[in-house]
Length: 148
Image (cartoon, rainbow, N blue to C red; front, side, top):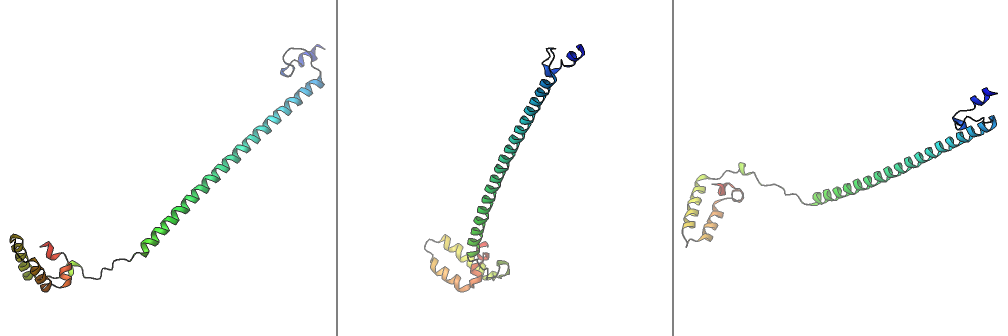
């Protein structure tokens, strides 16, 4: 056989062209197959480990995010409780637009105030007492006398 020797000269024989017995060729092929299988198994194991680590990292990230959201929710709840606990100002008085001020009294007070400002010796206390007597509490609390 020269035909056998040319058939055995493949990549498994190292390309030297020498005859490789069939048993040895099978051993070499089995060895390569085992090596390839082991390499694939190692790669699969590495991929599994990486996936496991990624899953752990993702779980840790989600845990931190949930913790942060819980803290923020607690903070908002505390802030809302503080705001709810504060007494709200009840606007019991009438609105300024609802209050009618006597224009004559208002213009008279305006003249007295202008005179008091220009006179250094004016009695401001007397003017204030007079204003309190002339106007109701609602009229005095509104901005209408000041806005004139």
